[in-house]
Image (cartoon, rainbow, N blue to C red):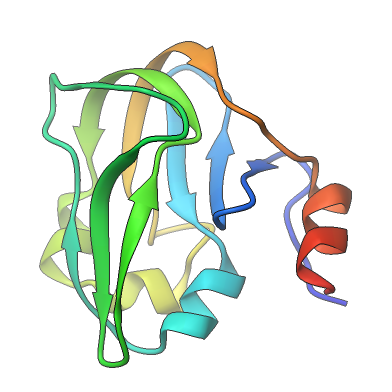
Length: 123
């Protein structure tokens, strides 16, 4: 069974969110493994307003390009420039150094617990 941090919340599109303030958003190990080697990230700009469940960027790997969906609504307050500069961080540490952006949250989308996400992914 895969190990998903219990303190995080998850989406069916394989994003995670740490609902601290500001909230931290990333993609799960399931997504990182399925994508293969991540080579490019297109993330929302600092100051932009995002809506839960909408496409807010792209993640490109040697295999494919996938859309990023926001798990929460709010204003982007920080982008992980280290991950933009070295997208391999998403593969190496998806729940840590490979986080994508931070948001001042105004609302949450449909979020799953770690157990619900594990069941969703069959992990």
